[in-house]
Image (tube, rainbow, N blue to C red; front, side, top):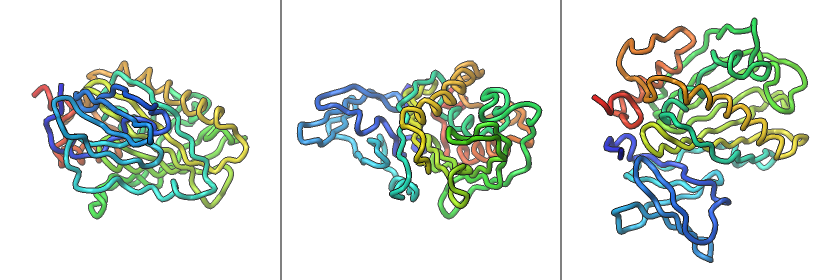
Length: 284
């Protein structure tokens, strides 16, 4: 099923890691539309959508190929940490998930599942409480932010040696993109940054593109990727078994708790924008 709401169409989306695109032609998909990606011998990239003559707009940003089926009102959001020369740039590949892309974003914002899904890594019993945090829709930048988040983690990062009370800041830039800032075990005054760019293939199927910008001069790139993929594959098991598959938008369809403040703000923000792709509103 193709997207029809402008709020979903008029966004920039990652569709591939730029370095992974070979010379020649490859197939791709976005919002129910088949795409053809062509890389010329000179390195230039063209993306064409089915039933469209002219190529789609494209950008290379953060090491990824971005495109859009609509007319975005804004450029791709900034991530200043991506330009800091001492950070490790760690793209973690693409993970296919049979779930709504919006479910992926909401799961990323959820701390309550840490002890039960990422046991002895991002959480462990009996430390299961999600302490009060602040969440807001920042109207000046049109983003959702959750601040003052904290959670005890046995292994907050691959380089962490002991359990620590980890500080988090969550930022949702567009309906299908988010990132978090979290305590950096190797630098007391800086944050590690983990981004998640979701590519909705269909309402109930997507690809997730995680990338990290880390202060870590000890771990190998392979170790860092394996650690992050372990975390995400643990999430995928839960995501693919959630019901309903599409994100519910009706009040009281899913009963939130105090720990779900970021999810409540995210859904309200989606409603304000008129996002329906990947939500229960598609069946209405």
